[in-house]
Image 1 (tube, helix red, strand yellow):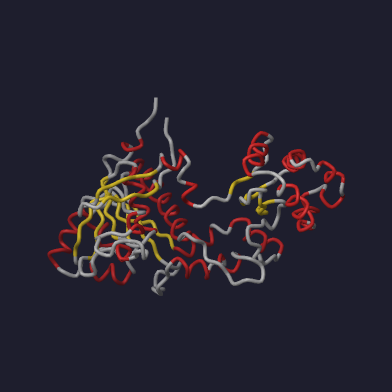
Image 2 (cartoon, rainbow, N blue to C red):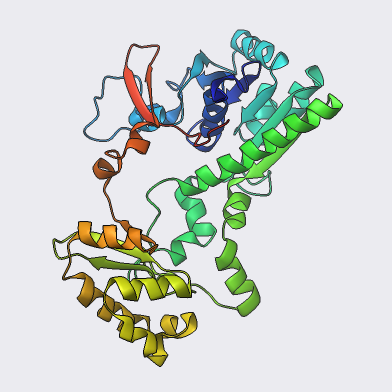
Length: 362
């Protein structure tokens, strides 16, 4: 029997004092799981700044943008001026009865308006206050949008093609990673509160979330002194992994061959079994060392076959490969269509976005 994910947090009240992407993504996560999420927006500035982040093709006379829509599904929106005593009292009343408060206010701003952790938890001992900062030091209130953190945490330096300028990832990846950290913290705090009856304050930062996500690249440096260089899609430890090829009909695809068996199957699929006898390609280490020569041989073979033939053959033989798709092609997939969330805003505008919860419960 399937479990309705919309009911998981049907008795949870979340107040969101956050804007842009990371904090609102956390609020939307709980909204998708059934929570009552109330987003407080600054009425003196027209609300969340991302309402105005519109592409040239978007209508200029609408109250929302596609960017804003991406992380603000399923919420109630209140426009308040927290420097106004009447509006602030409304916000404080909401927080006094909330289970969770999500904030990305600068600490000095939160304290000035009385919506900091200490002030709110003094009135609501069971409150879970989730604070997102830019940097590990909460006193560092330097502006820090996602691209700044991609630069400061090493992602930009590593990302891009050799001998070309650094490349920013095309989504606000550090914001998304920080949102996951904050979600996990809130879930842990809810578990603790269920056991003890006590709330708590959770704090994370964009910088710490970014650093925690360096994983193997961090270990390559910490253990071997290796400073990752820009390699495009290539993997520093595995070959052929991340290599891009083109089919006879001009479609790009990528290989992610991570085991000896998969490499054997790849050679079988392409009628290149003789490569297994060559010393240069017999181990992963040697394939990494001679990846350019290997790429040329594989590319020559793949260029003789259609994309459908290649993908069907790889799938049948357990070779990890993917077509490099644009978003129109991605959203032709049934699983992508099934994750589209629709909503009509308070202003009567139809909006679309992809679900942030990719979980199934049974």
